[in-house]
Each structure stands twice: as structure tokens, then as C-alpha cells.
Length: 320
Image (cartoon, rainbow, N blue to C red; front, side, top):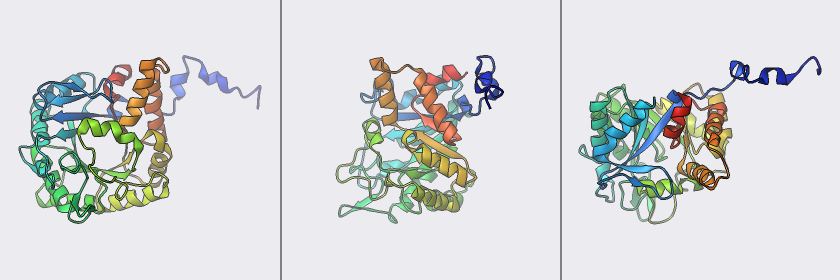
């Protein structure tokens, strides 16, 4: 009791770091990269100030720049030259992501390369699965996801990250990888991916907007938190090595519940809409750049082991 107990004693400037409970390290961060097979030069994403689509022949340079800042983990999203009903470019061995992975691993073999395994960037309808009569088909999509994962593994990916929220996707991918001799390739599953309004800038960045309906029939209802635990449990049983909660900032309670319930690494995706809101407020002078560090620390404090964030490069210098 006061005055014996004084909480301010340990808040002095030279003592604060000594008892800090949560620490954000540069190794906690994963850098998203949009690789555009159509681009001749870097193209800024209008709704994501300071973020770019990178031409295929510059992706290795982008990774090298990040590595020089101390960042070493990357998740790749591809914008292909051609789209069709089944997203066949997604599993083309000469596709944009496959070539990007090979280029990165050739020049930076120690980089951790993660690949997004989904169809939305590759289908002409923009949905994450095979479509028939206006419905997204779950089971018919699973073999295609397996083919995509195998093609990424052949190119050198360290981790594949299925993001389509198809039931059984982790099991199908694990089986396909193991069958083809890629038992050491890890799976980071988008286990609790919500049908969120925070994704709009990403759809511009990755040209992954859908032409009809929405994604509520396969992405989670944002009213539900307990359901996320069921999703995560199923993915772990199917073979997920890392589970993910997406988005992050408005879903800190879900991150915390997942971390407290399961003894597996937890990733959180600090998504495009979260990034764009913060960048807009900083540009307006309403917030200082310090808010980025506070937000990423909050995501770690909630329980995330790793954070995928578009802020990675700008916060890296601060963390070094």
C-alpha cells in the first residue's frame, strides 16, 4: 500500500527496459511482397502509401534491401499475366511466384521464403476456390491447393501459407507435400481469417477483388471468437505448423485466446486496411510514427509470435 508501494519507482527512464514484459524484435516480423509479372518498374499502391508492386526482375533486390535492415522473412503474393476460371497460373512451374522464389533463394539462400497458397489472385472471378453456378466449391478446390503448394516447394519455398479458408485445406496440402517428398516444408495456415472490411487496399495491391458476391461463405464471421478456436484446432490436427489470425489489430482478443489455448506458434497479419489507416493519420499529422511501434507491440503482447506487417521496413531501423 502507498506510500510503501510506489509503482512509479520502476518507471524511471533508466529502469523501464529492465522490467519490460513484452519485447518486439526484428526477427518477429515478416515482410509482404507483391510480385507483379506485368510490371516494368515499381508501382506504388494508391491505397497503401509507401508500398509497391515489385517487378519480377527486382524482387531479389527488394529482399536484399530488407536483409540489409535485418529483416529475413518474406511472404510473397503474385500478380500473374493471365487469369482463368481455375487459376492455373498459380501452379505453373514458370509462374510469377515460382520464378520469384527461385530468384530469392539463388541470391539469398538464408532468407525465409513463405508463399501465399490461394486462387484469388489467379482466377478471373477473384474467389479463393473453384466456382460453379455462383457457388464456391470446397472439395473440388483442395487438389488444386495441393498442386500450388507442391509447385512452390519445388521452387524452394520454406513455408507455404494457405489463405483460402477452405475446409480441409491444410490436410490436403500436407498430404500433397509429403507425397512429393517435401515433408520438411512447413505450413503456416490462415486458420482464423475473418470476412473483414480491412482487406480493401490488399485487393487493389494484388488485383484480387471478386466479381460477384462476397467471401462470407468461407471466411469467418467477425462476430465470432470461439469459432476461431475450432478452426485452429482443426488445422493443427491436419498438420499446421504455424496458425494465423487475420486481421490483427481489431482481433487482439482472438490472438490472445488462440495463444492461451494451443501450444503452437501463432502468427498475426497486420493487414492492409490497418496499415493504410495509420499511414493516412501520420500523413495528416494526427499521429506520430511512434504509433507503429505501439501497435506492433500490442499485437505481440496479445500473444503473436510473429507479425506479418507492411510497416516492417520502416520499423526495422528503430528495432536494430
